Length: 205
Image (cartoon, rainbow, N blue to C red; front, top):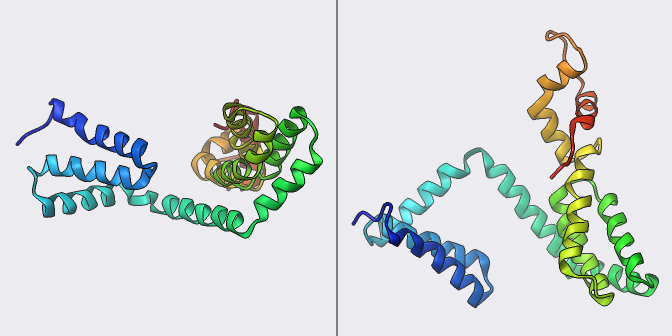
């Protein structure tokens, strides 16, 4: 059964979206949607579908497995912060200290700029910690998301010590060498390379 370029190709995403809305479980819904697509691809052979799923996932991950492991570790760290009560304690302190909507917005911005090691960690941590405070002062989730986004990657990418700086240096070391007018046979210092790229970054997102 060849389902290529047919209406059946819409079935897996529909299943995944419907299950996510019903169960509120994104990961399991995505996995079921992927498996349903594999079933269509293999002509409804369960074993071949499972094998195809993991084969494609393995080939697509490839060199990105380190990023996946990093994101999992970040999720574990944020979960530990939440379970330990640290974020709740900070939220309670912030609720007692902050007296206005403007103060809640400034506190969110400051915390977003203070956590500059990684933009993913920034978003997860600031969102978890400041959500109760912004909810108390009726600041919309959309505005909270905007503040977090505006102080996550843009700050991380100009910080001298961050995951963004390492990525920029590794990807653009040659271009940074041209900006610094360094001869090709001379190595470029990583910190100088990161600083050389800052003026050319309109936005880190």
